[in-house]
Length: 253
Image (cartoon, rainbow, N blue to C red; front, side):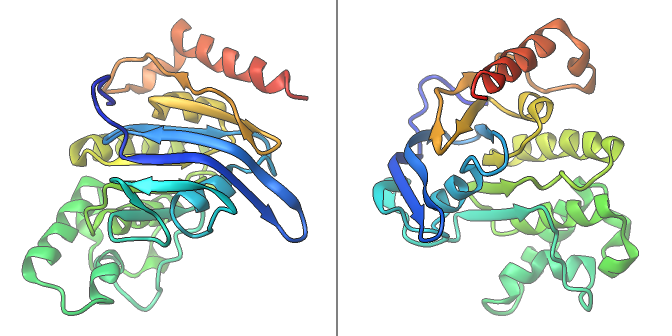
């Protein structure tokens, strides 16, 4: 997805961050994300990857360093950003479509064009027939699909995703990863994606960065062709990349 001549539009420059009760959890982190690129952060629990995502999105403020989106300093979340977390957090009293439209309705009336776009996103996620259902009528995988559509309804330039598929069963997770890639490619959306799953990172990403003890190692370029197909998971090239990342992670023990 990332072209070599594309200038990064999200930049993290020498970020440091410390929680009062935990000390410094992010140390001199740098990262560049280009339009349409998917960059995965992996690492063991407590390594700082979720904190980096929150810093990049303006949910936390670095004590040192700078976050820039499109050349502007990020101080809080903006309309150029979308978010998907492990829990879909859908509102049970709203329909599926109204949950998708929620980020728009919070700022005024939803237009017919916006409603049609919400229906289009749900159709792209395979949920066209469920627009009028309530969240409690959906499976976990379907709820995650609604959360992704909701994140895209404002046409964000970048998505921030924190282990959004971690609670799903393996079959549902594989299907959702495939459909998510198709949707990102269709909308040219950049993604900063946090996961603990090495195979998931290799399948989704253009680049993968390993974090350990608050520091980020140089990103590994995932030189696999797009569009990614499920059978790619069984190829020698895919397995070699997974093994390379696994060995690098084991070396941090």
